Length: 382
Image 1 (cartoon, rainbow, N blue to C red):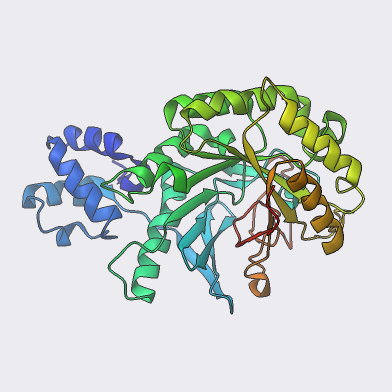
Image 2: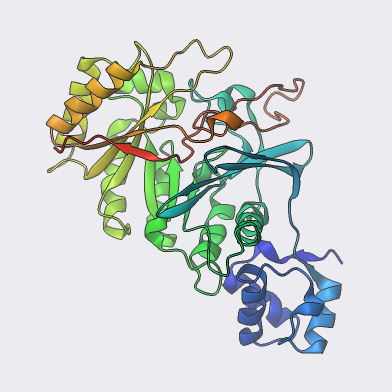
């Protein structure tokens, strides 16, 4: 019998597993705490579990970590890990420390099938979905590594963002149990406001997430009209802007925040002109009855080979932000963190076997994501 990876289970799943072992639910709670709150993987050291249960676990279960292939530390405190997820694939996870929070950027897939023009992951193609255990293992390892590093008994990671490799909502069945582990008070106890799922706009799954596990929502927008967005984000051809914004409005009543975050990668001469800002203002303020309650994050683009794109200059970005602010849209501009270790937005690197183009092994991957970095808020208020 293959041993079950206990990182694959949320609390309900673990309770069902324990029942199959002939154990009561409260034992699952104890086991869940040992694994996630204490970072334990050795059943023999779980002292408040009955010896008979520990013996059963030794035979039928394991806590399966990801192998760390490398770790890099930035001068600004950012840490980047490269994790081996097997089958020739590796993904990265980034920790970004700030004065009032510690944010972990987590991957949900090896590669990505969405194929956004400004994203190197889309160029490398899609390998496979990560399992729930592989998603959770990124947090499990990082949290307990950081507690040891900082000699802290308290939680170090206060925010998790599903903004690493992959489109989270295209790995929905593995994503939702992972989110529940993050939110569970017996696990990591994170607030729904502090767990964010970023999506390029998988409309049906946005609706399901609102009912199953509503957390903060970030939408990769990147363009103010369908023609331009379809060229940048091919998924827009299936779920155009009207459908996407309608889904955002449906999501908000269940959301822990009263706004959606829209991410907008600034591409020189492509989507950064004054007319694009005016279109974006009209789109967000006039959609539906009262517009879409939102914040807009402007993200500097980090170029990668063969993209054919360059980043908007600082003057253009600030002028664009000023237009949005003057119209009443709350707007932020990201500043890079960890760029000395290629951990800034658009600089994550993985190693992925592209199983959508099986004959080709991609090299020198430079992942463009919406990975979290410190906000540089424009001082001018709307």
